[in-house]
Image (tube, rainbow over all chains, first blue to last red; front, side, top):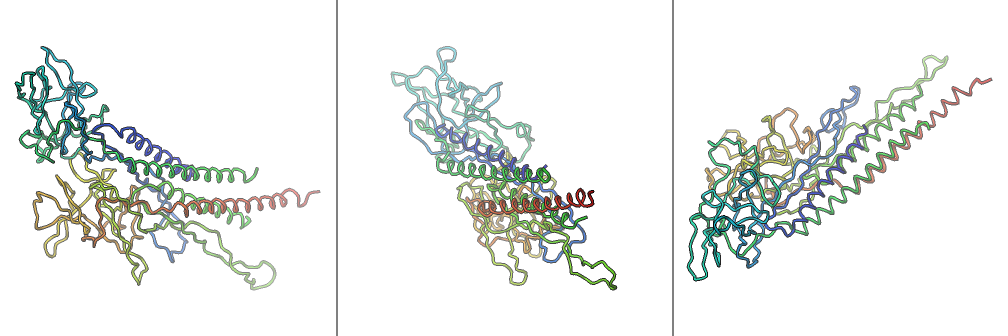
Length: 280
Length: 275
C-alpha cells in the first residue's frame, strides 16, 4: 500500500473526528453546565526498515535504519473540566455549584448519575408532593440517597449549603431533613458521558478496590460547603465553558489540515498514476 | 542490464520515500509536540568503470554511482509555536538552546512518561489530563513522572504524579500544591535534557526512547516550563507542500527516464537485426 495514501487517509479521518468534536462543543454553546472536549492527536507507530550494509555511515546523525512514520490518529478526547461562569436567571429552581462537585441524580436502571446542570423542574410525587427533576426527568437525590420530596409550597428557598426550605403562603417555612446531595470526584475523568448533560462513573472505576487510601469520590457534607468550595447559589445557572473564539480557531485549523492532507492524497494518487503509466 | 534503468528505479523509490516523509509531516500538522522530519538522500557507493578492449591493463574511465536512496529521516527539533490554552494540566517546554560549539547539536529538554510495561520514555507533548484515579496521564494513558530532590549522592527516584486540589507548575518544573506531604523537599516534573537528541529512537505517540534504555538523570529545567501552554507541531505547511511538489516531480522525472530506456530497449529488441 502506498504509504502516502495511507497517511493522508488517516489524517483526513483524524481531522474529521476533530471537527466532529468541535461541532459538538459549538452546538452546546448555551447548554448549562456543559464541559467542552478537545481532540488530542498522536503520531502512529513507526516501522523500521533495514538498509544495505555497504552504506557509508559518514555524516549520518540518527540511529541505524530508516524509520517510517505511519500518519496520525486521534489519541483521545480530553474533557475540559473548568467551571463555567455563573449566569443569573432569577428562576427559583435554577441552582449553581460554586466549586467542582456534581449534583447526584437518579439515572436509568437505578444507577446514580451526576450532572452540573442545575436547571431543575417539578415533577408530581404521590400525596400531592413534588420531586425535583432535571430537564430530562431524572430525580435529584438528597443527602439520604433518596430522591428529594418537597411538600406543596408557595416559595422555595435553597441556602448555600443546599438545605431546602418550603415556604407556605402564610409565611410558615419547613426545612427538609435531607439537603441536596453533592459529590466531589478525585478526578472527574472517572466519569463518562451518558447524554442528557449527565455522567456516570465508568465501569473501570466502579469496580475499584474500596480499600483505596484516598477514595475516588466522596459526598460533600452540607457543613463543608462554603463559597468556592461547592456552595450552592439559587437563581443562578452555570454557563457552558465553551469559548467561541477558541473553538472557531480550532475549527479553522482542523479544516486547513483537512485540505492540506487532501492535497497530499491527490499528489500520492498522481504518483501512483505515473507508476501505472510507465508503459501505457 | 542497463545501469540507467536501475538508477532511475532507485530514484523513483527515493522520491516516493521523500514524498512519504512529507505526507507524515502534513498528517501531523496538529499533533501537539510533534517534530517534523526531513528525508536525507545519499548516493550509493560509486564503482570504477573500465574500458573493455584489447589494451592491457584496461584503462579506467572513471567512477559511476549506483543510485540514490533515502538514508535517514532527520527530526527537526526546532521549538514549535506555543499556544495558550489556560488549562492547568497543559504544559509546554519553551527551550531554544544554542548548539554546542563542538558538536553543533543543540540539547533538547523532554518530559518523562512511564509506559504500561513500566519502562520510561521521553516526550515533548504536554497535553495532559487526569485518569479516574487522579494520576496525571497523557491522552494515550502514559503516566507523567515527577521526582523529589534526592539526598546527597543518591539518584532521583521517578514517581507518578497525583495531586489533589489546586496546583501550580513553576517555570523550573516545580509543582506547588496544598497538603504537600514533604513541603521541604519539593516535587519537580521529571524534565530531562538530552545532549544528542538525534541518538534517540522515535517510536510513535510522541515518544522518544534512549538507545540503551538509560535515561539521563532528571534535573530542574532552567525556566523553560510553562503551565497553561501547549507546544504545537513544528511542521511548516508551506515548506512541506513545496517539498511534496518537488518529490512528485522528481518521481515523474525518473519515470520519464525509465520510459526512455524502455523505448531504447524496444528498438534493440524489435528493430535491430530485423530482416
